Amino acid sequence: MQKFQVKTLVFLLAVGIYPCICLSQDTGISPQHHPWGAFKPGAWKLVRVVTETLDDKGLVASTSVTETKTTLVQVEEDGVTLDVAVCVEVAGKQFYPDPQIVKQGFHGEMVGQKLKFKESGTSQVAVEDQKITCKVVQLEFSGNNNKTVTNVYYSPTVSPYILKRKSVTTDMEGKKLSETSVDVVAQNMPCKVLAEIKSTSFVKAVQKHPKGSISTWTRTSTTVPGGIIAHSSKELDTTGRVIRRSTLELLDYGLEPEIDRTGIFGRRRPTPPRFRRPR
Image (cartoon, helix red, strand yellow):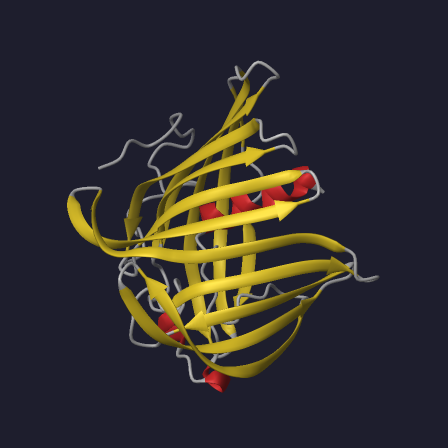
């Protein structure tokens, strides 16, 4: 389960759909509050994730580099469709898995997940010195082998809109598999994004599971497709030792399709170079 959680978290961060979670018009939230739903089809982003596995002495035992290009295919009434192309480098060798088409609902659910939700009133969320009144909605996702109950605190007027999230995942017998907390801890923080300075939010996410925990600090911007522009993450075992760490950086993005490029990552040459450099 531990290995699956790490791979899933890295994939979602690369695509740009975690830790953001947005609600549909049924609960008063527009698709414009979704990190991809606010953009037009053809918008894209390219990110690089470097993951290091550490040995018992804290030294790097192995490194993998994943470059992911995500393109918005369409925005529909029930969610967004994304085209995800990945290049993975391990031990100097590059691999190009087949591109994936990912469908995500505005509630944050993936295709195949059963979803229930109910409104739970309002509550105040503190971000720095500001107390923000948020609507609270409880979501329940059901998969084949587990169930996740999430309390979402959102404001339709304060970016990045989802200001707090608490989730507990259990198996079908009620045994806790993991719990996750996501909190916006700072807003309107200046950050250099490629060639310009943007206003960003800092988000802290902590996931705890029986074999340890994963802590992630993320920078997000509502002006970049997918929202996430950078993250730093570390995974600890039950003794508190760092066993894995990763970083994500935004290499490039666009609000329109790259009509003059070809290839898996929109590069001109059939065989792409190792990685595209930031602009």
